[in-house]
Image 1 (cartoon, rainbow, N blue to C red):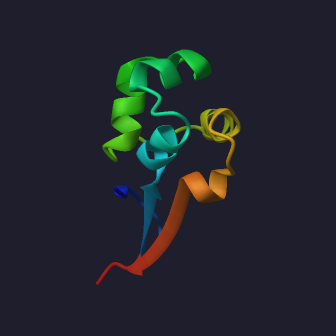
Image 2: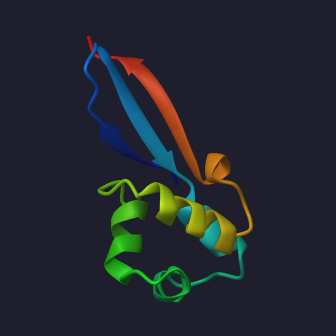
Length: 85
């Protein structure tokens, strides 16, 4: 399941960040949201918000999540650009 976070820009492009966090969480032994939150020292609600597309994580948090899930930031989060027409 890919959820989207819309990131505002100064031009006519709209950047959309999709997340594969839930997929990687389940591929890593079906970790619960709470277990992953504990591993990266954030609240469960932060994980819920990232998975739901309501929150774009900081660079530090994105790197920690990728490391704990044994993947790369690029695999975990995908940035797409679309014309805002």
